[in-house]
Length: 163
Image (cartoon, rainbow, N blue to C red; front, top):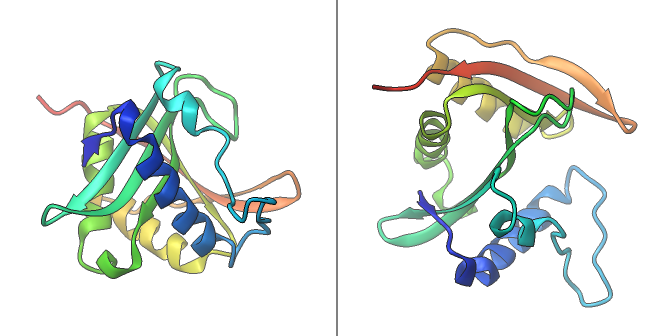
């Protein structure tokens, strides 16, 4: 995982299109008139200090992205780290790169965390249950939350600073 530079914004935008395509199976996303889903928050990741964009690579090849931001989408608590977007390209899934990347993110940003998973995305829910429990060293149960007419599972846990 490497921080994404401003000149890599088009690369992240392309990966976000793949992510949105995958996500459209669980969430009603509409294509714009230009044939793209778009991601209106992407430019903010180089303008706001509490947003952090990353590219994920495996064996030197592009494998995904991570967007981290400060501030809970559920409680609005500004101290909580939020896994805003997390995407591993299908070719690289089930190889441990997702879990390894998630653990790296949590070590990089110590403090309170929330990971939100749409209830309808059962494969993601299983992934996050395993990844978070492995990181925490114990089972971290999710809490079912309704927001905007949609149901989410929210995992809350603490990432400790590693000396």
